[in-house]
Length: 611
Image (cartoon, rainbow, N blue to C red):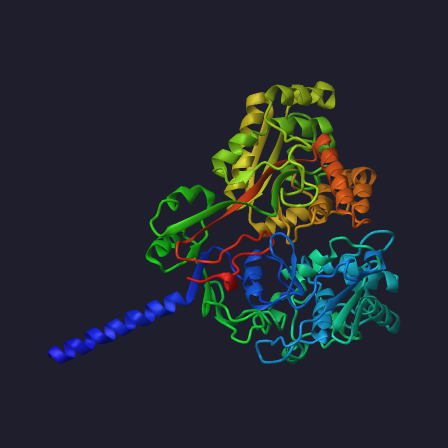
C-alpha cells in the first residue's frame, strides 16, 4: 500500500513537472479579437494580421523606428545603388537558404508570385490598394487602387461586371478578354527577376513604397508551388479574373498556411483559439518558446483570473479596467505607447435624405437638418468648440489617449504637436458660430438629427452623448438623438451617405503620413469619400494638390512641411472633431521577457518572447 502511494506521488510529481516544463515553453495570450482568415491577401484586420505575422514574412519589416531586412537581405537605398531611376526602381536581394514550413526553399519566383497574387486577388474592401497604387500606372493623374479600374478602362466599359456574362466569370467576348489580360500585363511588367534579385519598376514616384511592401496585409510571401497545389491562382495572365475577389470561405488559402516565419500553424479552432508551433528550421534561428497560443476570451473577469492563476501570460484589458491589474503581484503593466490610430467624429457634407429618418424633416425648421447642413463651416466650427476634449480623454479613455490635432498620429513624419493647435471646449465661441450660421436662423429655429455609432463601442457612444448634452445646454432647441447600428448596417448606411454625423477610427498599417492624409483629406480618400459631393468638390479645390505634392518628392523635410500645411488647412476649416489617438499598453506576467513595442505590428511578436 505504501509502495502504491509512493508511486502515485511520483506520478503526480512527474505530471506537475511536465506541466511546468510545458508552461515554460508556451506563451498564451487572451484577447477578444477573432481570426477571420489566414490568407495575407484577404486579411485586413488586426486579429487575422497578428496570426499571419507569426507564420508569414515580408521582404522587409518595420521594427518601430526603421526598416530591417527579412526575406530581402537589403533595405533598398539610393546610397547603395538599390534605389534607381530617381526613386522608381527598387532592387531586393532575396535571402538564400530560407525554408518554407513544408521544406520548400524560397525563390525570387515566390516573391513575384505573392505580390502579383495580392494585386489580382483584390477582394472587395481588402488591402490590395496599398500595392496597386505604386504598381499600376495612374489614370487621369490619379492613383489606381484596383486592377478592375485598368481592365474597365482598357475594355471601354463603365464597370467591371460589364466584362462578363451575367452571373459568371466568363468574358463576354475576345476584346474584353484581351482587356483583362492587358490589365495583368501592367502588373507583370513591373517585376523583373535577375539572378537572385527581384527588381520592381514603378511607373511613378511613390515615397512610401517600402512601407507598402512591409505591410502584413498583402505583402507576405507565399510558396508559389504550394499555393497553386492548394487551388490558388496558377500565375497565368489569362485566368486571373477567375481568382479575383473570392468569398472568404471559397478562398483556398483561407485556413491553410505555409510560410517562412518562426512559427507553423498547429491548430485553429475557429472562434476559440489558434495555436502555433515553433519552426525549428527558421532562418533566423528557432524561437525560445515551443508553442504560442492566441485564445479568444470575451469576459474581462475571466481573462483577469487566468492572468492571476498563470493560465494566461498576456491579456487584453480595456482602459477602464487598467487599475484592476496594475497592482497584482506577478503582473507587469507597460503603458504609454502611441498607436498608429486616429478616431474622429465625421460631418457628412452632403447627406442622402431619401427615406432617411436620421435627418428629421430634412429642413432647417427646428425639426430636422437640410442635406448640406455640415457643409456650412460655421456649423462645423460650433460643434468643434462644443466638444469637451479633456473630459472625454479622462472619463472614457482614463488618460490612455491623447487629443489629435489632425489626421497624423504623433509618430509619423509631418506631425507637429503645436501646429495646428487642438480645439478645446469654449461654449461662448460655440454659441458665436452657431449664431452666425444661416444668418441667425439656426440659433432661432434649432435643429434635430441623429448621431450614429457602431454597436458595442463605448468610447464612441460617450462622445455622442457628450455632444448631445452640451448642444442642449447651449440651446434647448438643439436636439440630437443617438442610436447604434451593428457594423454591417452601419457600413451600409455609411456607404449610402445616410449618417449625418458618426464616429469612425482609422488604424494605419504603416508609419507613413500619406496613409492618414489620403483617407481623411483627399477628394477620393478612403474615408472622406463618404462625406458626400460637397466635400469631394471642396477637397478637389483645396486639399488634393497638397496630397499629390507630398507624393512627388523623396525629401522627408519637404514632405513634412506639406503635411503640416494640410493639417493647418483641416484645422482652419473644422473638417473633423478629432476625438482620440489611443495610447497602447501591455498587461503581462512579470516573467515574460523580450516584449517590445512596434506600432505597425498587429498584436504580439511571439518570436521575441521567452520566460
